[in-house]
Length: 188
Image (tube, rainbow, N blue to C red; front, top):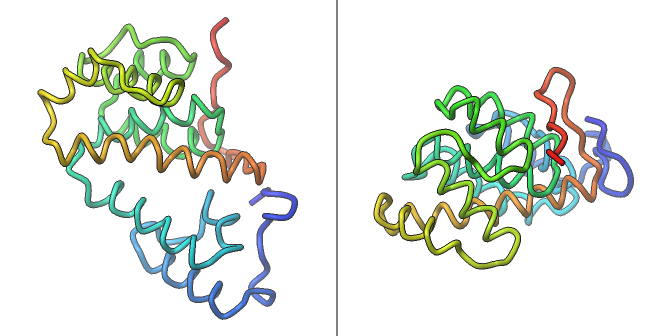
């Protein structure tokens, strides 16, 4: 991991017992390892454990369909120009069936012109929430008709949760790992 500065990786011998326990907890869960945002978050092991539990719910126990979840995550990664988040979730989005043209639109920072209406609405909702703090009314109405209220709540939290991770990684200068999909340049 190339995270640098005051939130860089900790050597196992330098970890407190609480940090060692946090690493053991995350490593024994569905993630299987301490990766990406959890490297800098480990500097506050109690916070890292609580934050990762939210993500564990959103990624592994959510009501959201995988294509909706991954579209929301890529939208957030693009908004915050976060290369690790993009690189980690790009193949998950492809595997979830998010159309390549939609991923290209999101990566370029364009309003989605391709793909299923509900996924374009996810991208527009996220872009609106992240840019203004308010929901795009058309997307909100479409998604409100398609998702349960619990799933719609989770979708909004996905944008906030992945914003938290993106800001932590951007502050820590967490890059994409070798072999990950590159965050595309924004369209001009």
